[in-house]
Image (cartoon, rainbow, N blue to C red; front, side, top):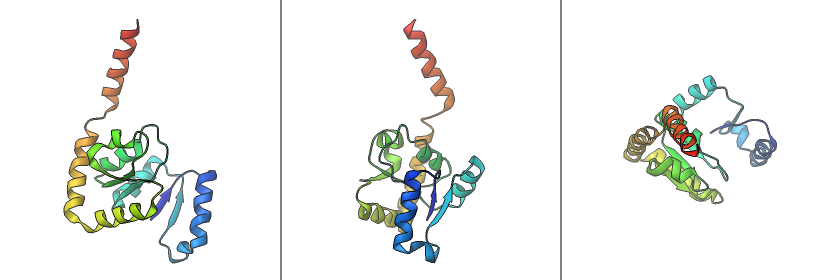
Amino acid sequence: MVLIGKEDYFYRRLKQDVYSTGLLYDNSVVFFGFASQKDLAYLYSRASLYVFPSFIEGFGLPGLEAMSFDLPVISSSTSSLPEILGKAAIYFDPKDKDKMVSKMEKVLKDKRLREEMIRRGREQINKFSWNNCARETLKIYEGVK
């Protein structure tokens, strides 16, 4: 498992929690730290699964980004994530780590499910583009005149 994020209070707290379990000693958890766009592309292209255990999310761009690399996405069911990721992701309560782990195991073990999630992910990302965002934003501005 590779954990990516800037070195802030929450990231340091997560590191401390993982250190206390001893998981770092067998290399099953890697704290990558901040990742550039190039680093992210490299990591996404080598991953088997993207897990998005967010409690609060404004939009959910990382999940869509992972889908663009043909990764199945398992996401928390909080805030905007179900609306943004749609039926392409599988959801869990971010407070229930056992459910999260069982969903991860299921997707990693079930090849048909993985393929279906990848197909749905491709469909989901086609619903979003920066050009569409700009057009829709312009329509709103023009309507306010």
